[in-house]
Image (cartoon, rainbow, N blue to C red; front, side, top):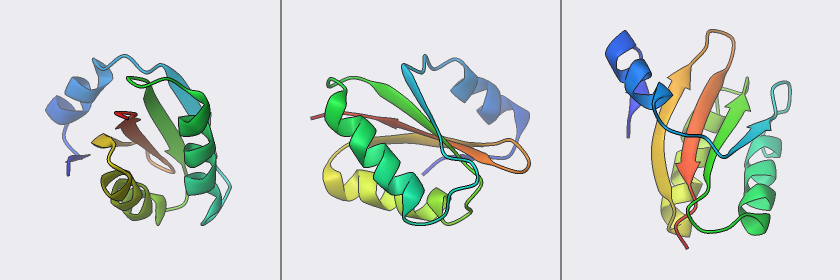
Length: 91
């Protein structure tokens, strides 16, 4: 699991092309995860999704669900008051 706290790792994640952004800042569990699941259902395999969430539980819950569901967790970027959680739909 890649959680970025240094500039080099953050810059590496910045190079990844995000296809869809799900902005759920201000929502709390299970909202961010439910929004991600809905977005995964309507997008094709290969889609890279960034979930913007201010709920700290999302940085744990989303990667766990992604692994169980068989998708790819790319990493987490910290933006101060919120996080950007990057995932790729793989099936």
